[in-house]
Image 1 (cartoon, rainbow, N blue to C red):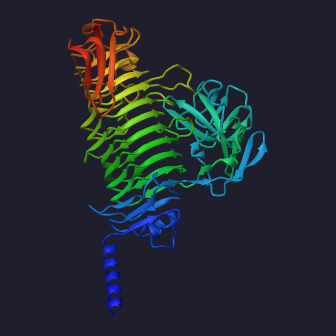
Image 2: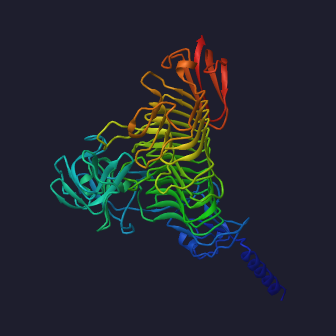
Image 3: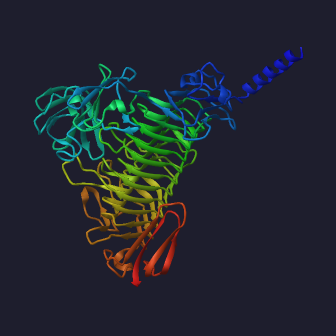
Length: 624
């Protein structure tokens, strides 16, 4: 009787704790789905088992460190305030790996350095193939270094669904994918449904009308395979083809994207932390109508499309301390949520391969945040973005601060974008309280491959048509092929205390011809605009239809105490005596000086100086 009563009490208490969400489930590659999962010794084995659980507030699902788990995790029950459902790790070693790919084995040499293997678990498409966890290139004709930077030219076109190439067709490309550049900011792709010589008919229209003398190339066709590592997926027969002249793929781990996402979250009060995710067909972390969702200290890499996508509606999203790397399209895409915190994340190699991202506007971005409401407050802070195909941070929201971020090497495959960019033209909404503060922006490349001209307009801070009520303060922008700061049809903007140095144009302001927005009621004060040589423009002002303007031509706009080389620097800015230093970290930086210097205001510096976090300084030498 005592034993029976003790057992009854144990199960009664277990039921109570379970109802209050106190269960901690463990998952290990050496586990068994027949276990209860409540300890490392009785761990589950698979993601499928976790998907079958009914989670309660406060529950935790922990994956064993160092293990790999293939499949798609879906969280459908969330927590409550103070009791989130936690998806995380246990044990020591490398972060557990939630892998969205399948292993492709048993390769057969078909001749001509082409290897073939069945991929029965692959879906209708494959967006990534990996050898020993490194991404391999999708076959492409012409190759990136051939012809004109990897593009063929369009001779003529018929609307958005048909074009004729200037070059004779080298192959029957029907079934392959045409990647067409129709604008500086657009790279579209569409299946080729018919071909007559060098005339191609597309299965779906491009997002903008095709343009003569612009570029295209062919991908996703077996005829493109001619370089080591290039691959093609035969979706009809579910076979993978791989070009390899130097290595037997059977001696390597070859994986292909198969599961749409690594993690789905369809609930609120969920925290995903300390995990590694990669190699999914589409997305790493996907959330839908998931308020109070946190993604913290995760590594997300080798994504077929996007790393993090959260849409629907809600509030209180937190992305903190994540490393996002090698993503074909967007690093982070958030829409419909107020009170978004994105802090301390690193995003590298995002959307850097033409044709691997999505079609239409946007795409190939580091981070895009859209919220049309007026409640809440969002912060994008202390993030590092490097090697981005198009825009670094794109925001379309009120009540937001973009501050103390370091953004470098962007606009690598598209033009006419900014490191920090916003647009409010079509479907204009009233926006207030937008701040761009103390960011370090550098090395805007610009990409004119597939275009008929030499334009490489890549801008540091870009306020596009209809932007309003924005504060741009204490930022540093340098080495951009376009403008350091560009106000394009923007009004009620404060540009104060910024340093724009060594850009093609340091400051550009113009009206907008297309959407009809004028630049007006702006304040441009206390900035340092300095070109490195006489060819770089300090300030350029344009009216509609590119008519020249001056500082008195924009209604209610004031220019006050902006530092320019002709009235502040004793030496030509191209002289080696000019010293430019910046600090893109969150810690003070000590700069050793090899002589005496002065800044533009006449302040003297000797021996060394200390730069505050996310700041810069321009000095000229006065003595050795």
